[in-house]
Amino acid sequence: MKKIHYNSPVILTFFFLSLAALALGELTQGWTTRHLFSVYRSPVTPLFFVRLFGHVLGHSGYAHFAGNMVLFLVVGPPMEERYGSGPLLGGILLTALVSGALQCLLFPGTALLGASGILFMLILLSSLSGMRAGAVPLTLILVALIYLGQEVYSALLVRDNIAHFMHLVGGLCGAGLGLGFRKRTI
Image 1 (tube, one colour):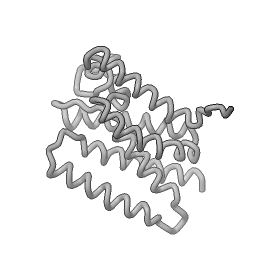
Image 2: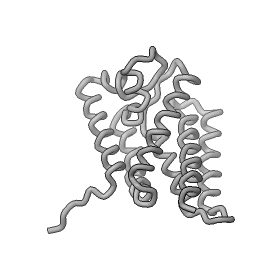
Image 3: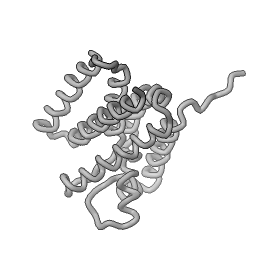
């Protein structure tokens, strides 16, 4: 009999914490989702800092959760294997902090929740992982054109209750992390 291997501790722990946040939100009829797993401008209290990082674990429902987590579980483990658990956790925390702080500063009347920014950080980080000295991967160019183009268009022209600006922020964090990780390995 084969054993099940917890092959990607950061990615799998993030998944299970997000699943727990979703279940808790259902059990509390959305109270925990609003008060623990969404970030919005509020007085700076200890709970504010929980929300500042915890918003990436919250999801509005199962469809939102599944939409993020399927791709998260595909893209995340190779990035954790390539860069290591510590650096990847640092990248997730940095992206959560940046997106949460920008949400509070730029969009004070709305709340943000979900792992989309983290997912887009991983996508851009993945696109940069094949970069070699003096060459830009074609995959990076294509992802940037398709993804960034769609998100810029949506951020400017589409009103759909999706935080397109924060997707861009996550992608920029991933690009910055990819370039930073690359410099450390050269």
